[in-house]
Structures are given as C-alpha cells and as structure tokens.
Amino acid sequence: MKTFLTLMCSVAIACSAGAAQHENKAKKPAPKPRHVQPVQRVAPARGQLRPAYQQKVKSQQHTNAQFYSYNSKVKKAITGQQHVARNVQQQKLNRSQQIAVSKARSNGTYAAKVKQQKITANSTRVVRANKIYKVQHFNLATKTRPTKFTAVKFQQNRRIAGSQYWPGKNYVVFRNYRPVWHDRWWWRHHYNRIVFVFGGWYYWNAGWWYPAWGYDPGAYYVWDGPIYAYNGLPPDQVVANVQAALQAEGYYQGEVDGLLGPLTRSALAAYQRDHGLYMTSAIDRPTLESLGMV
Image (tube, rainbow, N blue to C red; front, side):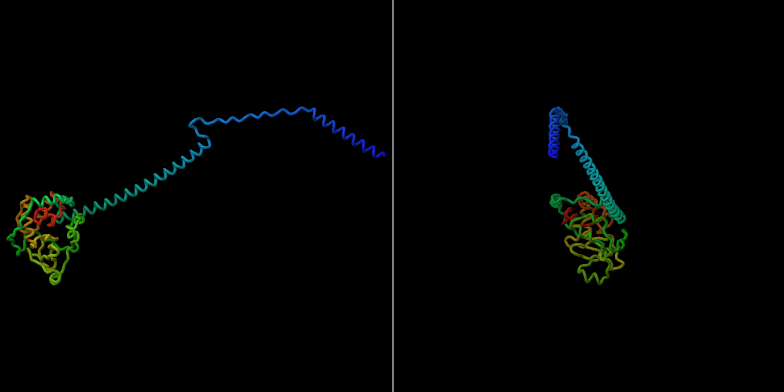
C-alpha cells in the first residue's frame, strides 16, 4: 500500500511539471519574422554585354586575332617563296636570252631583236595578194670558191642562236638543226640529191637545203644552217632570188651573188623585223611568202 501511494505521488508531480512547462511555452512571445533584403539585379545598358559574355567575347576575339595573325604570316611566307621562285625563273630566262644574243652576235646573225610577233593571217593574205615575185635564173660563179667571206667552221651539235624562241611548224628545222659530219659514202647512201655550190656540198631533205659536212673535208660554207628550197631551186639560185627581192624592197644594197653572207642575213633580219616575222636572219617559208615568192 505504501508503495502504491509513492508511485501515485510521482505521477502527479510529473504531470504538474509538464503542465507548468506547457503554460510557460504558451506565454513566451512568438519570434519576430526575419526581414530578407531583396537582391536588386541591375540590367545591363542597351548595347552593353553581360560581364561573363564580355569575357567570352574577348577570349574569342583574342583567339581570332591569333588565328588571323598566323594566317597572315603563312601567306607572307608563301608569297615570299613564290616571289623568290619567280625571280629565279626570270633570272634563268634572262641568262638564256643573254647567252643566245651573245652567240648570235658572235656569229654575225644578230640584227636588233631575237623574237618578234608572228605576222597575222590577214596581213599575210594582203601581202601575198599585193606581191608576186617572178622567179629568175641568175648566172652565178657557183663552181668557184669565194674569198670575200670567211668560211664558217664545223661545230658538232651547235644550235642556231635564238631558234628556241621561234615556235610553229615553219621553224621546226631551225630548232632541230644540229651539224653532223659524215663521209661521202654515207651522204650518197642516205640522200639522193646532193649539189655542189660555191665550194661546198649541200643535201636536199623535205624541202630544205643543208650543208653536207664531211662530204668534202675541205668544203667551204658561208652559212651553217637550213635554206628553204622553193620551186626546186638549188641553194645558190634561192639565195640570189631572195637578194633580188630584198633589193626591190630597199633592204639589200649589195651584189646578187647567191651567197648567204653577213650583208644578206642583215637585210633579211631587217625585213623580217619590219614585217612582223621572227628574225631568223635566214631564208624560211614565212619570209618567202611575205616577199611574194611562194
């Protein structure tokens, strides 16, 4: 019984304490609400970028600037290399032209220019319509050896100076010509038409006369190169008719002797220059066409 009373008292005391605590909590004032300061976001001015985007744009601009700078350097380097290559090529071309002119001068075939523009088709027709040259036969001392001109010497594989600048089928023989030396037996077994003119032997091949070097080791030649053989004439008569035609045009003032000497070659070069032909200083088909001979 005593124990039961003690337990009841403890329960009563605990209930009283809980009620008092609950009453105290009810009497405690409620906490004031905390005032939060609103964050004010300032919008960027019109036309102005946000800071983060500004940084991104600056970074992209810097990258672009580096890229363009690199491209510019590469382009300058490539342009510089191309310029150097063009200079080297031009120097080689100038050097080859100087060598050709020097050789031509030493051979007496240089007149004024190496290369001239080709005569146009229209002007060719006009010239041939206005000029008709009648072939003549001249009484020439072709059986004698000339003494007024120094004989040219044989130079194996010699090229005609300036011929590399004469394009077209009418000038192929000049570009391909190389002096060759063979004995009389060889020449007779390879060509069926060989003539003796002014101390030298000439062979006929596909419409052209060429010096037959070696046919007679002591032969005399005043010109080492092809001569266009029109109307089947021998080389001396071809040269004589050209000299007569150039006399009529006022370009040749010498004697009609059938020799393609320096004076005749100089007259040919002057005529070719004035009529828009390549200055071969030799007898070629375009020159004879312009003179009205073919």
